[in-house]
Length: 336
Image (spheres, rainbow, N blue to C red):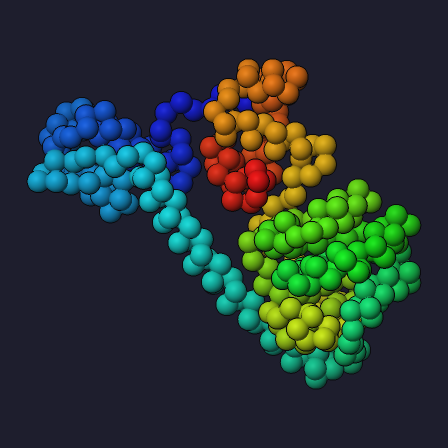
């Protein structure tokens, strides 16, 4: 594990600036105010090449031009501009994914027609009621244990109902080795009363939970042959009286499983449990400006352990640097 970079370049490179751009930005910072010619001399480059790079930095909002001279924006403001542009691109990507998810309407037409083009007719059952939903999952698991349940929860109201009324049967089924739950939930639901306790129990008994900023809809894949689809894709279950379709065919299960795995790959694990608590501790202390040695003394562990926890946090958050890990951890509510 390498030490945290001490220059301003690392966060900008992480967010998409190439090394030449970050080096030029650092040169503008040092000179404070300079012309293209002065910067070309400082960088040992041609005026034409440096000019093109300066134009790019001006467009990115990290450098300003005033009467032929270039001034660097404050590093915090400059980084904020770069982050804002990256978030805009991520939002656009999310909109494209949501558009692609609209294609699931074709699947709904298929199972409404009652035809599986590979295996002939298949069963589609309209089910109503929250009790029926959660009891159905345990019933399916009893038929062929151990069953893997993949499920997505899109909203706070459904999550509240699950935590208050229905988590216990699933946790008990996990203790009995009947099923294993993998769930994706919105990060906004974590502060709700009881959520941490119940999800902690779910994880302790073998389940796995990850979070996304936005979950597109409720759905589930129960084992290899049974899928659950909402009566209205994108809505929450309580608003529709827990009306949903149970579809028994590998074709639909396979599609929903693929959708779940795509979302799972973008989701972030919960920072709970012994390993997660260690990651959160070092990130919180680093956010206070403490170095590795100080963090090690504060926690009563070795510097090597501190660096290993940083590495674990970066891997869990998909971060390329400690700075990036800290930003992502704060956005995910780990440091709250």
